[in-house]
Amino acid sequence: MLTQLAIRDYAIVERLDLELAGGMTAITGETGAGKSILLGALGLCLGERADAGSIRHGCERADLSARFDIAALPAARAWLTERELPADDCLLRRVVTAAGRSKAWINGQPATIVDLKALGEHLVEIHGQHAHQALLREETHLRLLDDFAGQRTAVTELAETFRSWQAARRRLKRLAESGDEVQARRQLLRYQVEELDALALGDDELATLEREQEQLAHAEETIREAQFAADCCDSDEGGALSLLHQASSRLGVLPGHAQGGLAEALSMLGEARIQIEEAARELHRFVDTTELDPEQLAWVESRLSEVHRIARKHHVMPEELPSLHRRQQAELEGLEGGEHDLEALRAEVEALRDSWRQQARSVSEARQRAATRFGKAVQEQLAFLAMGKARFEVEVEAREVPAADGLEGIRFLISANPGQPPRPLSKVASGGELSRISLAIQVVAARHSTIPSLIFDEVDVGVSGATAEIVGQLLRRLGTDGQVMTVTHLPQVAAQAHHHLHIEKQARRNTTQTRMALLDEAGRVSELARMLGGVNLSDRTLAHAREMLDASQQSAHH
Image (cartoon, rainbow, N blue to C red; front, side, top):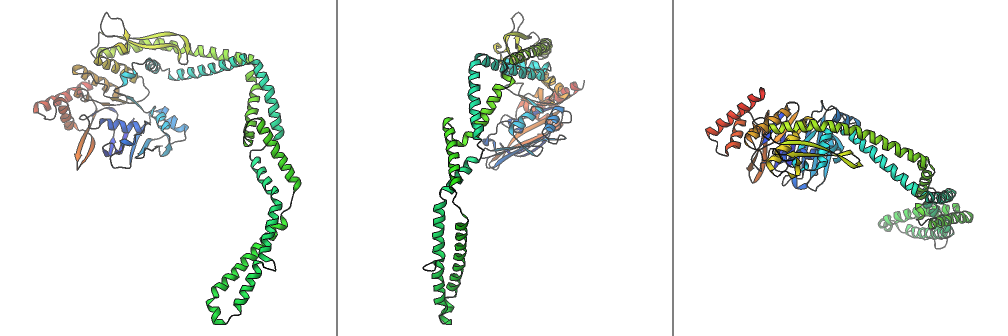
């Protein structure tokens, strides 16, 4: 479960460190106080998309981290262990810069956003205000029923078998339709691969050949120019060394006082002589050791000519020939391998189809059994939520065409009033009814979730009065076995919580900041009174709030 949340320079929060506990925690505050900040910060730690606009005004970056206790979460520990990350703790950290860049860490090791998302799926389940919109989509119905039936792994394996079966079918169809084409392609590839085998061009050989050709082709000119340069340095008549020697000698015979002003020039002339002697030696060594090799030049040019001829033939650049060679070898091996044996491929398609059918039948049976149980469980919750006359059904409808996720589609149907035929959820007109139906479904789904941390973001919208109190009781019950955090505007829901987190906005010296704090009993009474009666708290409102809190906590103990 989530034990700590640290927020730095995010939205209107400068610095916030929250310690969180198990059970049900109500999160309340005035509209616009920043309840969404808490969920936004946690969402970023769980891999949601970052927005540079969420950084606190005037700051360079937002820094967010969430710590989870995963002692009772084998799937999360296994995920960390597989990636060689410490599994005794779970700390997710995310930094978003004003430039829009984002970095993430898991237990101190750099991680990708995809990693945060994947691990987050084992840690927290968020039921948002828009959850009932997702509930209008039938793919959501199928996923919820599969989770309820404990079939998620089986359905993933079913989809993998389906993809393998369809891929094998496509290969068989292509092969059956193009037997002659395959034979012709095989013959062409054999000839082309043999030609490239004979050429045997290495990956870096072309560049080496081109450098060698350039050196050999210009060897004669290079030797000639190097000899000329050497002569410029040390020939007896007019060479640089001869001229420097003369200059030094003429200056060297001048009287001592004249030489004093020319000492530096004499020194530089001496150094120049040493440098030019060195250069002359290097040039003579080069001329003496460089040989003309017309035979090697002819071989290199012949080899380059052959490389260019074959490249033109294949319509590729010469440097692309080695990779073309590898591709053609791989294609030829594939065409000559057992994969393209028609009979073997037919047998593979049949085996995969039979395997998929067997898996699909097993999943179907589990879905049929679970559909009745799921329908009853939601019906019970609806009765609890003052919709006892409604009738909820899970319709399992056979598909005409097999699909990756099985042989049937799933639809949730509701009849809000007696005598009316059940209709799809999308046809339910009342927002309040849809909110309660959505909550009932989410509660049933959450009870069968393997994730102990559940967050409900204003799922009680459209609910009021006695029903609100029941919603609170439902959420509290869910919290007894794990951790439930619920953002709510309803005092009847907040009163049921084990813990109460209050969020308020404070304006200070031209800045606005958000404070969050766990309330003690007196604080809870004041906040419930505010939720009941607004800003001015009368004794009567406070007494009502006290009574509501006492009644909620006492009924929860029974």
